[in-house]
Amino acid sequence: MGALKSLNKYFLRYKWRLIAGFFIVIAARVFAVFNVDIVGDIVNDVETYIESGDSNLDGLKDSMLFKLGLLLGAALLSGFFTFLMRQLIIVVSRFIEADLKDDVYAQYQRLSLGFYKKNRTGDLMNRISEDVTKVRMYLGPAIMYLLQALVLFAVVIPYMVRMAPSLAAYTLIPLPILSIAIYKLSRAIHVRSTIVQEYLSKLTTFTQESFSGISVIKAYTLEPNTFRDFATLSEDSKQKNLNLVKVQAFFFPLMIGLIGASNLIVIFVGGQQYIDGTIAELGTLVEFIMYVNMLTWPVATVGWVTSIIKAAEASQIRINEFLEIEPDIVNTVTEHTPINGAIAFKDVTFTYEDTLITALKNISFTVQPGQTLAVIGPTGSGKSTILELIGRLYDVTSGSITIDGTDVKMLNLNDFRSEIGYVPQDAFLFSDTIGENIKFGKTDATDEEVYAFAKAASVHHNIIDFKDGYDTVLGERGITLSGGQKQRVSIARALIGSPKILLLDDSLSAVDTETEEEILNNLQQLTTNTTTIIVSHRISSAKNADQIIILEDGKITQQGSHNQLITKEGYYKELYVKQLDEKEM
Ligand SMILES: Nc1ncnc2c1ncn2[C@@H]1O[C@H](COP(=O)(O)OP(=O)(O)OP(=O)(O)O)[C@@H](O)[C@H]1O
Image 1 (cartoon, protein in one colour):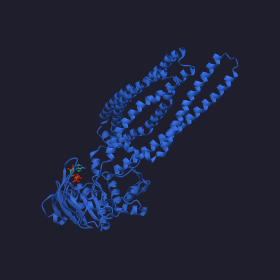
Image 2 (tube, rainbow, N blue to C red):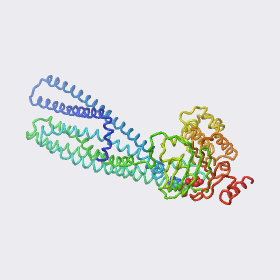
Image 3 (cartoon, rainbow, N blue to C red):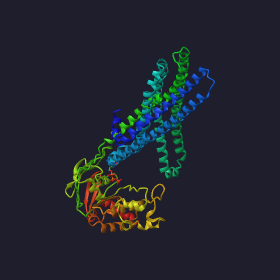
């Protein structure tokens, strides 16, 4: 139960509703028990009337009518309080579920990029859906049923013992057996339903992936293979479901069997005791049968609830472990730290923790504020890593990165990131309108600003050609932009915030050379006060940069301006000659 203690703070948040819920549970159960008492009374009245041999029915009729009225009143009140009880306790569990989801999501936002590289999307999704749902079952139904059961035991059992002690003992004997059996069955159901859930996730992931990769599947006529794989997975899933259904099928027969056994005991033992006079009134037998039926479900819930609590505890342990993870990158500086944009790498080495690939080896370079640096190099040489380190998506393994002479770790992270315009290689656009996607770079931007920066990124003319212009929705239900259009919308998003540092990761690779030139010219005008780093495979993107570095296998092998580098033997000159030849062809 240790892990579940961390939920206490949420309980405290809604304590008044829970306290009210507690009293209402008592009221609902008391009225339910009152009903049984009245039924017992009615039977006793009839018995007394028959035994008295009185031929006048009027007195009996009046008293029965009155008691039936009471019965109706108590049933209505019990129903009303049961409704209120669910409204309070189940609603609180929904509130806490939402709070917990918010906390889990907030932690996702806090964690650094490295965390996401180490964990699979499915597992990340599970924590916010599956695990939280299991905890909610404890917060709502488990607590409500347990409370209901405890109140009922506290009211009914002493009453039964007082009425007929030995009959009470006989009747109550099967109930703990029922509770233990239901607990064991619930555990078995839980284990099997977890497996079913895993298969459901596999099926969902499989289907999702086939939807995303539908063009590849069709182009390579992979439909039969995909279908075969799906059918195998579906068959396995069906088998697991059948295993689950088998144990689930025991649940109600077990309950009905044990209720039947208790009823038989009441009738058999109670009948004998009535005959030999140990029990004076027939009403007692009727009340006992009603109590046994009333107690069966709460007794079963004790077993069921115990298994829910166990499952919730396992989920809460996972949630707690996750909430306690500290992000690798933390902001330790609270005061504002405006920057000018001078970047210096000093002996920077960086190893990715998950793959242990050393992407950068003793890198040193400096860029003055407002200057442009181009980074050129073969694929996998570490170019993107440089940009990720500048944006502090990771921290260096050794060496240092300074901005205006201050170590990046000493800058206010939020301030610093707000000064950066970053266009990653796989520029991601959200399922929103094009206009809103550009505004992500500056949430209070005016429409005029959006148009101006879309023009600077040479994408305005494409956008206005769409039927809905800037209101065109992107993503699953919307339009799909071409690779080049996506890149340019992302550039507009980076530029609109007027960043001090602009990082372009191969961001012009999907546009033709004329558009590339147009954008680079616009950038030159717009970024006189912005330090720009352009990662590229194209000489055309690098040639006008103030400084170019060549990166090979994580090391700087050449450094200089375009004019200097084309005269030196090496990667840059080779690339220049190759791309010149391609252009002439
Ligand atoms: N998130 C990551 N986790 C682990 N290893 C990574 C990660 N990102 C990159 N790497 C590895 O680090 C090395 C450098 O990668 P990087 O993306 O910086 O190269 P790049 O020069 O930008 O390549 P490209 O031109 O293909 O984009 C590669 O060997 C790559 O496999």
